[in-house]
Length: 121
Image 1 (tube, rainbow, N blue to C red):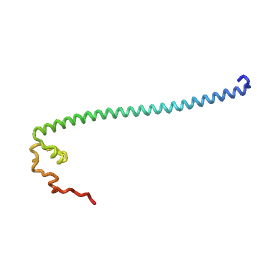
Image 2 (image 1 turned 120 degrees about the horizontal axis):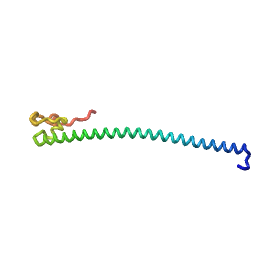
Image 3 (image 1 turned 90 degrees about the vertical axis):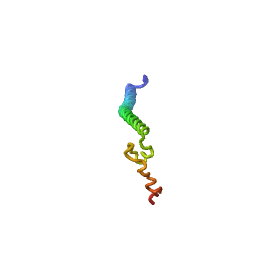
Image 4 (image 1 turned 120 degrees about the vertical axis):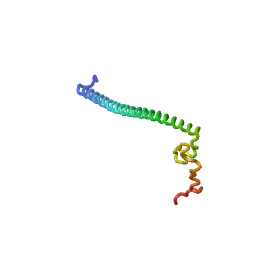
């Protein structure tokens, strides 16, 4: 710079300042973009945490229901409820013992005459 004129030195300094400002501006844009990305990810995380909490609560309710159903199934099995196959055949409806006679309810295979239905052509 010692051999340059004042005008050349000023131009060099100005050029360096412009390049520095351009670099700083680019860094600013990248930082803003990353900040927005972090905010978006934090919002997603909060949503997922809320969904996880709700799912755990639902699982807890389902486990309690499952436990109650297992207890009922055990009681029905021990005290003469209909066999599982009959319950399945009746569409999952549990009929308390004494309400329906198993022998009086023919199976679907017997109702259809043991014939399998053909798919529509």
